[in-house]
Image (cartoon, rainbow, N blue to C red; front, side, top):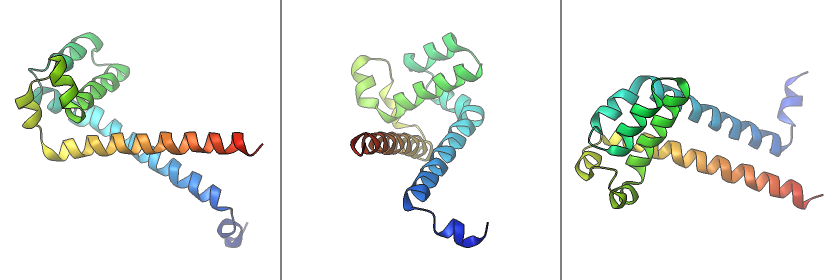
Length: 129
């Protein structure tokens, strides 16, 4: 195998590799947030019943941390929906650090883009049979 082999691969291969890289980096960010910043985020949202109930119910396992991170993300990224339900304190969400908010929003955006590309890839394969 020489370099010409890698340079002459189809564009679909390079697109798939780039999507895979994006997904892996999103997962690395998620794991970092689960193990390094989750407790800090939950302490900042200690009046939110959505976050506190998930923390008590799911505990400190890997699955529990993942679900707790999803609850924090839901509270921060979609505050209008959770404020209507009464599960989030408006002032705590507004005081949440902007950097962490943007990181969670970027993570959600990357996941949505990945799902969109995966679905479009499946439809493309289905339509070209």
